[in-house]
Structures are given as structure tokens and as C-alpha cells.
Length: 132
Figure 1 (cartoon, rainbow, N blue to C red):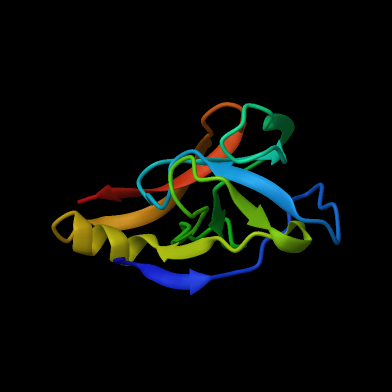
Figure 2: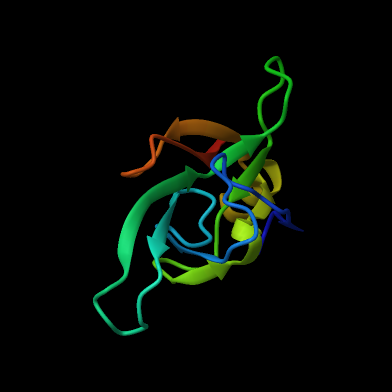
């Protein structure tokens, strides 16, 4: 996908250690949409006993210099509402170069990563924003 740079390891702030946890992503791999990763207690596939357990993390901009616009987006995956496991409670989100993503998918526009309000229940998230 345009702008994709590979994956990184990500541990949530409330990392649980050596356990397998189960998650759902609200937007799949879509750099132009702010997403939310939600954790669930394991149920049986196809059953109704999967329950949201209150843990979340939003997508984020990568960078540590507040004087330079963010360029890179940490984009959760795999697909929209796909239940998936995080071994050792560690995810492997994609990193996107917003400049490249916008340039190639929005007729040469410039791109930056912008922190924003997340979709419920995430309070914060981020997305690539394209402009001339």
C-alpha cells in the first residue's frame, strides 16, 4: 500500500505481559481515518460470549519534535472489525509515511499526521491529512 513502511512492536500503556490478548480494529488499514483498537475477553468464535473489556488504544503520530509537523502514522491493523490475537499483549501496527501516502493517493498533495479525537471508546487517535 502506498506509504507503508513496515510494522513495529507496540505494547499498550496497560501492558499485561506474557498473555495472549484479543483485539478488534475499527477502521482496518486506512491512513485517512482515525481508528480505535479495542480489547475483548476471549469467547468462542461464532458465539456471543466475546465481551469488550475496556482496554483500548488509538492510532498515533510518530515523532518527538513539536516544532516539526508529524510525518509518520502508527496505523493499527489487520482489517475492519477482524478479531485477532496479540501474543505477549503486543501488537504489530503498520507505520505509514503520510507525505508519501497523500502524494500517491491524492494527486500529489502534501501529507502530515494529525492527532485527533478517536472513535468511541478511544479518546485520542490520529490520521493522515492531505492538503495542497
